[in-house]
Length: 406
Image (cartoon, rainbow, N blue to C red; front, side):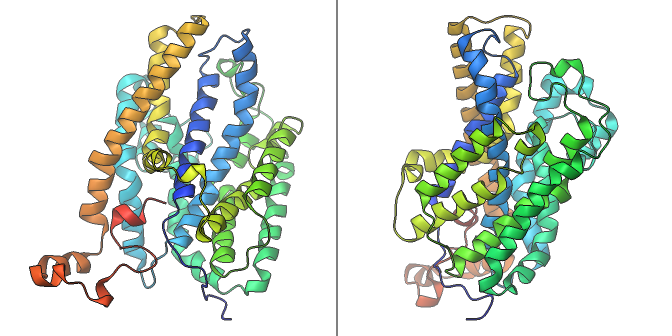
């Protein structure tokens, strides 16, 4: 078998799409704890922050690994570098600009310098360890942009790795990820995050090691490479006997371990391999005809809007909390109501962005210009009687709304 030969049929992965929303909701719950929606001395407050901190960091690792996986899974043969970048930038940039402007308008303008605003707009702010202002979650888009610039160069190299060595490469990257916290702790311990972070996961944490492990794009590139390699393992039929139940148990074990190890190890080191195994197991199960609750139509629809939900949710949480008063101790009823309102508004805005901005932009500008010309020139008879050559390939129909859902 040639190194780059795929033996698994590609298709839309509904369970992965559903899992995207679950991961985005976990990040939402983590921020609910950070912004003090539940009183710190209440039963929910005492439980929420430690319970969601580790899960939120697992979700971040999940998203970065999934990025490499999905790009490899949906890679189009012969696609040029420029067209690939155009599709990816069009996928994320409209939502980014809208949410950046919304955050600046509502609360971020006073605390965002001109330099930070400029870096944020052009998705360069992940390269600076100082607070970037704007819409907080957009730092991950800055990391993603770095991934996208390198992916067309990395995928051909990954395809050249012999199939019987792919797992060794996964193990090697896993070792590197585990070693990073020890290296990061050699960085200066000062400055630490300011007193305003008291009561959050960043209380007493040194800024530079934190930045190096969670945000610094070359460090997070290891997650992206894991995603590429796991996709190659699945596509070449070399997945081991490691099903979804085992993957879920491994993810749960990494969460429990995170409660006891030093904080810097929870940022990615103990999460990367479990999240990679979970993504691979979910994909293999679905490709073999298995179905799970993650593939339910409701979760799939939520997953399709999960990117917009991820970008908008913190803006809504901050705005709702500011309306209630950050120093105000909320009753349990007030807490539940305010979180429910924030979730409902976040979902409404996410679906609005997805249906009225993200997908229209993708349909109009992200498709092949040659295909668009051919479609415009097609006669009604040709459209109504498709030939075998015009039927959708196993990889999808080629329409942006189909190919970009996973």
